[in-house]
Image (cartoon, rainbow over all chains, first blue to last red; front, side):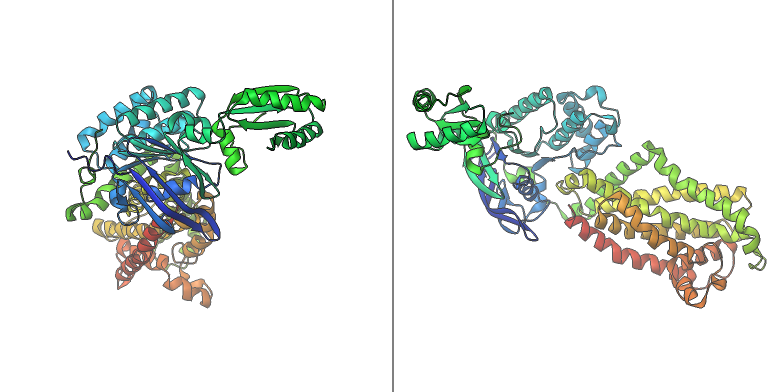
Length: 322
Length: 272
């Protein structure tokens, strides 16, 4: 067996653009995914994540640019690309009238899994996704989480070397989510390449070796989760000022004294910094002089959520203070 | 790491595979649709109860009046071929509903990412609906025979008539495959179908002869496919002269499929 593809990227996207009438869904997007890694596409609804997945899985053509899966162009050779990929969509795309087992066997048939392998493969996946007990019930009797698991299982039937997961854990309970993360790690350990989209920064942080942050169809950052966090400083200082007017005054004051403006969200001030505790001393001195004592103080590790906020000016659905 | 070459994973499909794939994948999708039919019996019940009610109502309510203008043919013998055509025409809406549902649930999206023939989702659906029509036509025949329907030609005439009915139902399925993909949700598909289907079925010779309709309506009624098909089926089953009606009916079927099948596949490639 040759290893010619071991160094080439498993997924390569260059200058990718997609327009729907006058809406620009993707604008000059570039990224590469090394084989055997997890790549996270991060962004809120409407950022273009699903559009990117649809193009890469040959469902829709791009308006401009190129996209390749294992060196094969998705527009020129969609049939070949379809033989190398698995897709689990945003909503559970399984047939509600078939049983779980029938669904998996149907996908096996449609992906040209040899007849003798279809039933064993279905049984294997049902077991792996903890669906064996429900295997012969029509899927319409399944809970949302069970459907979602079956949907991911269906994507794995032909053992695709490249897997696309579009918000795979949306709507899953924490237990199922953790189980799915574990499974993704196992797949990657076996050499599968995974591109996943998510609105959850924690998910990207836990799973992905590399993350591209999408905002309004553009890549605003493409780096490791670690580097993204480091870019803003490793700690974040959060001051709860009680009331908005006090927070506004404190923000103005700190901007003068520390020549950096804190982010304000209501009565909450947030200051990223490479060294939170030193900054804390300066901040408290400055505030004390004006009798602006914070009601709450927190120094914490910066999260991808902070990165996201800094890059896009928007919060993601998961993050933020209550 | 265990890298694999693209050629290992994706053998280029040979010619035989290209020819075989639409059949193989179409049958797989068809099987899936038939399972749904078996498992959700109300789908079948709704499409059979309504024509049974039609047979009984028309037979006993209008039979007397219409029978008076039929010159010797009993109304039930006139009616049954019309009901057959009506059943498969209205039944074609199921094709639209099925495809629109697959679009809505996201199943279509998954199919489009699989290495399967592009025509399979549509052919699998229309062939499953054809199988459903075989069942429905057989059932309605039974009800017809119970209330006095008699075939005046022979068993071959009856079977030829039934085949013509099924061919028309198959053609109409392709029309509604296009409708289903175009509108994209089952409710709209159903709502869109009625204003088209009602005139097609009722402004025809399916239930009453067209001779008492106003002249302008006769122009439409006498030349539209439901009348032509019902007339051909009637001639085959009653043993009256067939003339060119069978060929005209088949020409409609071929024409409809030739126009709507490529349109349907084109919409499927585009629809998301």
